[in-house]
Length: 223
Image (cartoon, rainbow, N blue to C red; front, side, top):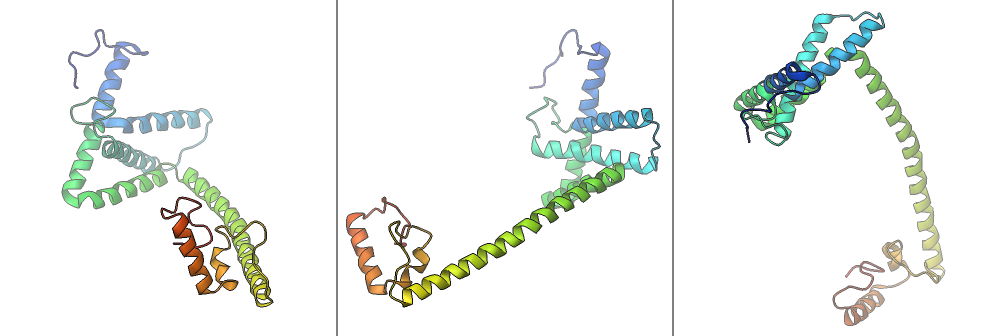
């Protein structure tokens, strides 16, 4: 509910002026104001480190895009659940942007445009950070694939070798299981050592003693 008047006296850790600025920044800008604050802190840190910031116009454009994308995304996800503004949680900026996009591009087009705004904004605002992050992700993915592909190949080769062993054993009159039974792992190759009539007989015995299939369901064969 939108309550009026607000806290009396209106104040936060920064006093009445801080409360006034925080309220109206959230009201008009939405949660995207936190993107502005974080970017401002990063800007001050870079300046204190005496490092140059190139292409300020593109950086500012990226900041604007990220601010709109953050407020709009927040409004799409939690329209009225976090902040008690009557217009919604995205602030005037986020709500206006999403309503405009939905009226012209529907929900799918809005999602695509907001996602594209996130990507373009990040690239313009922090292209070096984005490239470093992308490089680390690519490095991690290549390492994972480098381990997963050989493991999958070895597992497939192991399965093929076991299948050949089972076939040779069954052709010599042997079996595929000892004291541990078939379970789920070997039920696919059970027909190698049992013909169709034997399996049908086992199924009828199973159904006679366990009509509801509550004892070891899915073991040996599927009913």
